[in-house]
Length: 279
Figure 1 (spheres, rainbow, N blue to C red):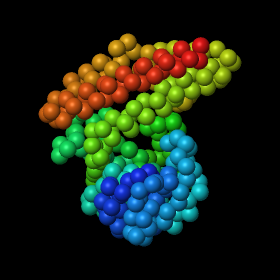
Figure 2: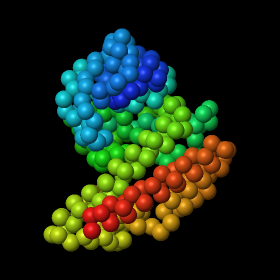
Figure 3: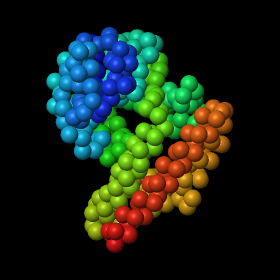
Figure 4: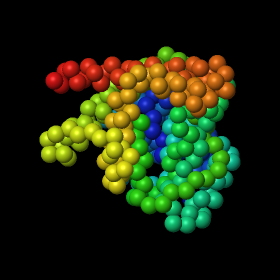
């Protein structure tokens, strides 16, 4: 009824729990980036189909999977190894594909956890498009990819539980240090691409961020507006901890807001470095 796609790289710790949460599917695919631990062995023993591909960037990796993996069913549910499908969500997924209506994709609500605390308020965004028809979905961006569906989208009930700190704080910091490099490269790539589209000149307009009719142009200008904000790391902390009421999540909310502001600061520093090197 539903095929499952899981991306892995050295996930022997988290993969067993992830696989157990989607054991209701008889078509589980693991796209592995040549793990050096027991990830492939664990996936194979659980009956999953394993495909290996060298990781280049997130969007390219995911788009390759949708175009090349022979899914058994017309609907695919995507999740990471540190995520778990709740029983309520599993039922909602099945109901959605039985009566999809005109929809080509469905959003699910994700709960991020720090230790045993649900980051209910401070979480950046709780909704993600994870159930979709592969031919109607594509991804953009080098990291933290954006889902671009080709058709109507709806939402379903139930939670997808996410444990980003399951491997410890050092792992989270190392991973986001790598992510910040890709984010900085994405910012530079966006500016180069936009400059080419504008016949060689780089143009940025606040008005275009609000009113231009072209979705991609509007999104570019909106992101560029955010990237140009002075004191962006502090603004992000204020938004998460105060405006989104992250303080209601207790010490976990303070920790997460601080970590996100540090992550933003790394992006700022690396973007400046790339601009200096390119000039």
